Amino acid sequence: MKRKNGLFVPDSTEVLSCKILHAKLKCQKTPKEADVRQLASTWEDKLCDPIHVSYRDGQYGIVEGQKRKLAKMMVDSEGTIVCHIYRDMTEKDEYQLFSQLNNSKRTYGTNEDYEARSQFDPKWMYVIECIEKVGFSIVYSGGAKENTFGCAATLEEIYDEIGDVDFINMLTVLKDVCNGFKYSLQASFLKGFMKFYSIYKSSIIDKELIKVFIDKDTKNILKSSFDKIRGKANTYTQTKDVGIKIAFGLLMRYNECCSKKNKLAFGTFDSLVK
Image (tube, rainbow, N blue to C red; front, side):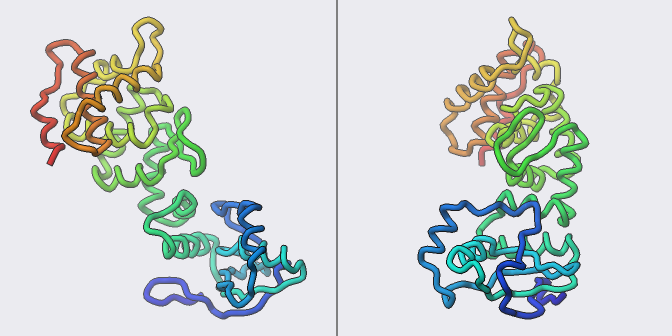
């Protein structure tokens, strides 16, 4: 296994039979058949970039390049393909290589990249630990559902902004007042809740905040409560920042629902708008 400037580099470049190459990381998506067929329809060996392969335990595992391998086999079932070979890697190394290659092609990480990072990146692994400690989980495909986040990038952004202690405390308050309701775990609401929490954390009373989400008649948390917050948010026109707008909606609804003596000061909110 070789490195250069902290990045993995291939040990060799070889031509291998497509039949011995297999995807091996759980974060890898299976390419869509239509995309494979499209690539195969215009296939030229000389235009194909080498695929990236880890040789471990006697097997050649594709870390990047599944679609190219499948397209070549569609053109020639006995075909070969040029491969960059990495040797003596651990599984953790393979996930890190996947992330390295993924980020070299994109401005920001994909969900697949976050799933790969869950196997080796200390910061992201700690974020996951905090999430699970509070009683939530995270998925890397599909949206939010009960007790489950589907917005990895937003969670990391929030963690970076508010830090270790406030991150887990904010998640605890979110769990206590919304009970894992899926609309509370969506990216836009989460951004607003973080901003609302960050400036009012010393003044928020959980039993008052719960009133924002609980329907008086059914005693249940309803989607309509989140619609009311968004309705208030849309009246705030001083910024286009969705997090600040949702925070304003939360402030308005909190003060409408809480007792008079526990209302939050509007002046504090001004610190969010710079």
